[in-house]
Length: 117
Length: 115
Image 1 (tube, rainbow over the protein chains, first blue to last red):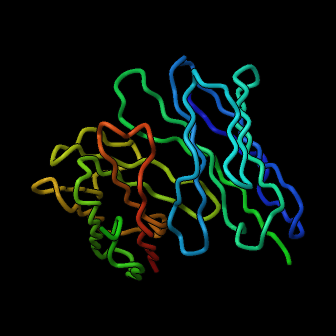
Image 2: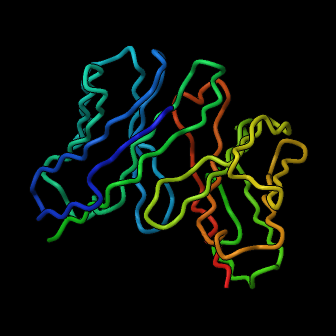
């Protein structure tokens, strides 16, 4: 069965600290996509990044970076020098391609990040 | 284009009543998805459309739930005989079929409270 686990329910840091959000996934398929979404208090899910299963290259976008390790089925997200505006719920998600690319996403339970000034 | 629009933002209803939510996707997107999110959980897939065709429904979508997308534009999600367990945020998202791997655009959701 496909599953995404975000073991950290809540994380609290002080502004300017670095923080890593963990994501572990399970899938039987070799072709899949992984995503991170941010959900601020307004409720709208905001797309952050997509990674396909054949691309294990890490990615950096400003203060955000992602570490994809297929060997450990993990796709972790690091925020460097956190800011109060980063406070939100962050979701990791998995989309499978085999069987037809439905685009259906399987989400983890989410990690609530609170950045204190 | 202002993104995916959902109405109403909030709905409070009495148990047993019927409710209907509306989603207006990004105009050029041919795929539309409905998800349900309960407190403290991640969104769960309910159903999706490609144009006007409903291609998949989750087991979460009981007989009391029905979704439509007439003419492949906006979509409605109706819940009949609401139950307290239906209280959740209902999220709509849209994407282009050829770019679905690149993630969706989500709306702000409709928060349903059944009292």
